[in-house]
Structures are given as C-alpha cells and as structure tokens.
Image (cartoon, rainbow, N blue to C red; front, side):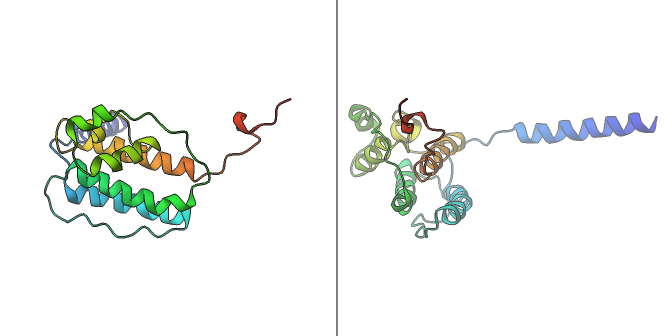
Length: 169
C-alpha cells in the first residue's frame, strides 16, 4: 500500500510539472528576455573561442524588442566571433524582394550579410516576419541558428572524417 501511494504521489507531481512546462509564453519577447538569453550564450562563446564580446547596446526594460534590435545584437555577436572562424561558408541564397517587403534602411544590409553566411534563415521570422516583434519560439530558433553557424565556422573540420577534405583514391 505504501508503494502504491508513493507511485500515485510521484505521478501526480510529474503531471503537475509537465502541465506547468507545457504552457508556452505568449506575446512578443522583451528586451530583458533577449538580454538574458544572450547573457547565457555569450560566456560560452567567450570561453570556447577565447574572445571578448562587447557589451550589449540594447536598452533594458520589459518593452517588446523589435526585429531590428535583434538583428543589431546578432551582428554584434557575429562581428566579435568572426576573427576566430576557421572556414568560410558557401554563400547562402538571399531573396532581396522578400527582405524589402517588411524591412527598411540599414537593417536590410545587416540581414543580407547574416543570411549570406547562414546565420539567419532567409525567409524566417527574423528576416521576413510580418510583425515588427518576435515571439519567444521565433527568437529561440533565430538564436539557435546563429550559435550553430558560429560554432560550425569556428571549428576546424577533420580531414579524416570530412568527405570534402579527403584525398581521392
């Protein structure tokens, strides 16, 4: 009987925990959330690459962050990591007509730069999104894409395990 009550208690606690985790955040991501996410990513990049990423110029506050501000933060991180890149990516396709639909000014130049290097999805919400803000999941995808490309470019591929670098037979 004691084991049964323990099992029921455990299952009840697990279902409460999963219900709490299943509730997604809604609404646009805020400046504080962006700063918090970058504050977790930047030390790892600093340690791994041996660089110093300059301080964020993003203002603090619970105000929704714009896509332009996120692109500015991504450019700051990319430029700090760029000297440590060991490979050059093939240029990714950029769709200027898509970028011009919902973007104006210098952000188009920055987006084109990041898209060509594979750090931003060419038709993702950061580059093309119809709203001036991003949802939490959209920002998470964009940040993951940026960090993935930085780590891929700063890693020296092995001749032994990379078919493109292997000597032909």
